[in-house]
Image (cartoon, helix red, strand yellow):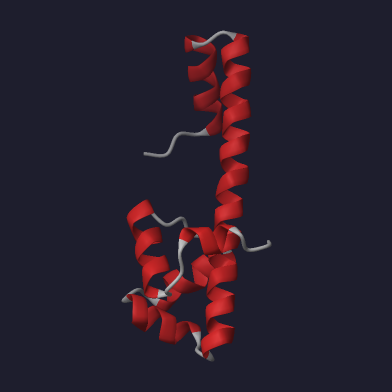
Amino acid sequence: MKIEKDDFEKFLEKNFNPKEIAEIHRQAEFEAIYLRQIQKIISATLHEYTQKNNVKLDDIAEKLGWSVSKIQKLQKGSYNLSIPDFGYFLSRLEKNLTEIFKMKN
């Protein structure tokens, strides 16, 4: 269920005081930053894997059992993986968390 921004703001104003609303907005900004960083890491991991193994996105899609469209969205940073899918992605590309979180974006 998608909630429009105006409806969400009205909900916040009805249920929280201004200080609490400010904290909710601050946390949401951090979450957005972290999500974009993870998306960049996933994209960089895909790029590195294609270069290192001389493969195309089609090959990665086949290896993962995912659609090429999903891989393209991951590469563009416009698709959010669930935690289990993120783990599967890393394991199939033979990466570990320590390795990818050290990547420079």
